[in-house]
Length: 135
Image 1 (cartoon, rainbow, N blue to C red):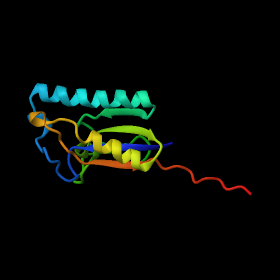
Image 2: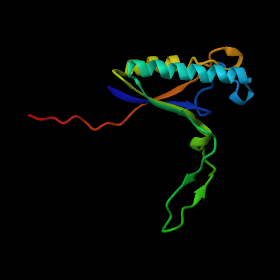
Image 3: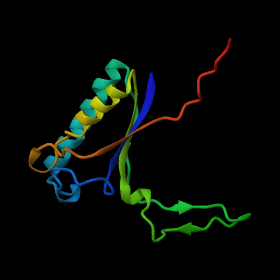
């Protein structure tokens, strides 16, 4: 089994087909989207492929150690994860192909008008230690 991170982006990825920002959806459309995500996660819990997932608030900041007692905070001129990452899901699957299959299904979550978003998801395998070779 290999763990993969499925990243949902606010921006930075190619535009989804149904490209209406969530803050312009009706409450019913938001509820349908959240329900789809919950049902998807519940189904993967049953198969043992779901590890965790969360939606992220747009608030956040970068913090860097800059000497004892001086943690500078920046809201820099560069793109920050709070602007980019809307949420994530960790899955544990048998193959890369299965990770892609699930990401494709997740991208079909409903959006404005109840139609699938067809959003782009970033699929990233977790870094693992190389296998130990013994003779």
